Image (tube, rainbow, N blue to C red; front, side, top):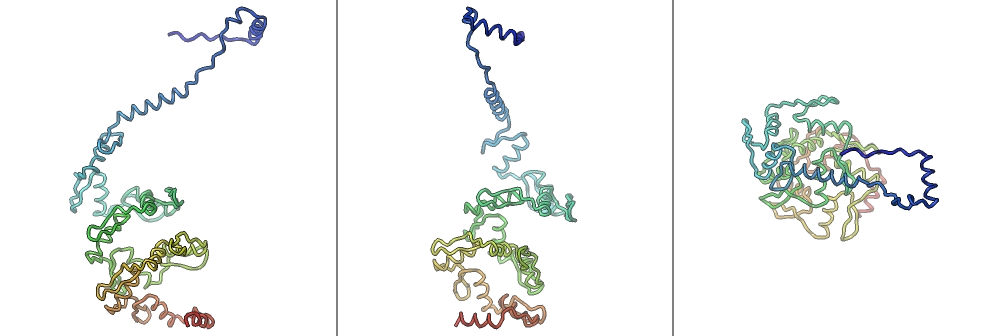
Length: 353
């Protein structure tokens, strides 16, 4: 088909034609109304969408969940998430994996190989994804945003776990007691409580823990280390969650309210304990005397009355105590610290008398 002829019209020609139309020329009467050029943008968009749909329909499709994949290999690996097939076994332990790449990453846990070094510190990592997440601790980048409460996270998996706190979803139940957990790792820690498996022992007081991070936090009781400092005052804390809770004392934020009495709390766990004062629930029971308690720390202290255990030892004189608060008071006999004035003591006596 030949290209349409393009006719150039000069301003003089336009004037002449305009004059002819005004003079009632029969040629002017024969002219048809001017037609607007056809807008082809919508048509092009529709054609593009149709082409994308056609291309998508040509991609490998999972018959179970309907997902599309760019390569047949990805579909094959994905199907194993439905079938549970793990054709790549580890030669060093009894674990198996659905893909060879997952096996390679696992083998580094045996060999200790960490081929991905951080260029901001001297640490190295077994996978590139773990390195990327670690580097965000230097840059404080938190690219994953919760749309429900505006919290930011360094990892997408952390955001996914956090969203379950809004929905109440706990997809990992314990088959022994029915208790459910948000994360699989929390379930694994919980299962050790049934097996009485406490792999991590304190070198100062021989107390054992289910989790290694719990041991690290406990060790700070003996060492006095408080690595979490408040930028608004000079207070420091052993635990990060204690710092987060403390910061709310500066902002006055108390986002958790009791539906029974309206009292507000800075932390959801504190509100949960408070709710038991209304319901009378005491879910933590002593196996020795059947006495029950509102919170696990009360039960732990009570159990020491049966065992005689004194988990908190003074590093200066070696004296042991059943409570951390008792150890803190005792330490003042060595340091000479007197945090309460005479007026404060009289005021406290006035309150309790």
